[in-house]
Image 1 (cartoon, helix red, strand yellow):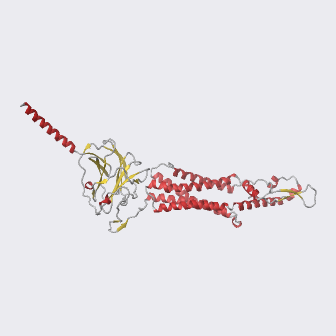
Image 2 (spheres, helix red, strand yellow; image 1 turned 90 degrees about the horizontal axis):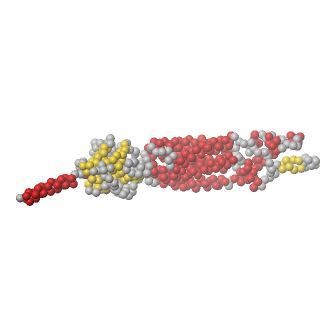
Image 3 (cartoon, one colour; image 1 turned 90 degrees about the vertical axis):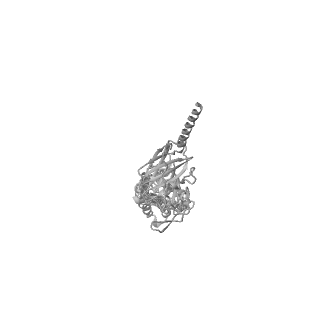
Length: 491
């Protein structure tokens, strides 16, 4: 009897225990987080987690929703999703390398798959659910981020996205018991469901999307630019035109025109008009747009090579303008005439041997070069070196902005427009040095003309001071220089 009682009691206990175990195993676990207009629900199903993004924004008002795994936007893998006008849903895997639009990840390590039964597209609310593998690390402390916007991208997963309305971070505990996820009534007007489960690059995207008016709107490989991207484009155009077109053109004006007699007194006007009146508004405006964009996007100023080079270019440009002004308006006093400009020879009028005359001696080519180089003050050479440095640094920085900064800030890959810009840059790298090098061929002619002018001025000064020199044989070259007029000094 006691054995029968013990068996019955054991049977009851086993049944109770098995019942409890069945209940525990049947209970789902997961977590929930809610922001102002977005809730993130999660339920563990085996070795996967179903994430459901739910918002009170209807399909006509919602732009996109996103979650990511990490504590900050930069570096966290993200799943961004949005409904399309044709009833499909886009899922885009992205990662941000800076505080900018995240870039598409072509082959994400963990792929999100759309969960149809838990998705809902309605006029007053939207639910989009997708399944992913279990996150690594403790399930009771999963660091996550979220964001959403009311501006909808185009259907392709690599479309350009507007900035979020709200974003933040939270910690989700996936070990708490919770009810099943709400179910939806997702319906798609597309016969091919693959358009709703895209991840990474587009796979089978429709060629057009039906608008609200029922008209067909073509899809473009290059979606329209956002307002922030348009500001970046204007910044790049202004800086490229100012530094790579106007400044080199202004530098070539004296190189090609100062040896033309009819333009020898006019080249400077054209030079400063291009270098200052035309270039400075573009350079200052372009630099200000770039500085404003960095500040508005919450990034740090001068935090990378492009921004630091931009600051260096602005400083060098201001130094160059100031130095050019000083060189033109504050000329140093010319050096006293020295051989081979002057040569003492006996007079030809049969006078005593103590009577001499000063005559001009023709210089050799090497003497002309040497005299022209020595006649220029050091600031003139510094002016030329800074000018070449500005053009070279600008060429490098424009390419850096096109290749790296644009994709980092916008997340866009190379488009046709950017490829054309890159080809333009490559052509300009060749054109500017070639034209400047060809202009150097005129240097011997310039040196010869300058040597002749200096010798001519010396002769004029000697003639104008002939009478004082006759009365005072001790007149020195320095005294002779003092008799030169301002016009004869301006060599």
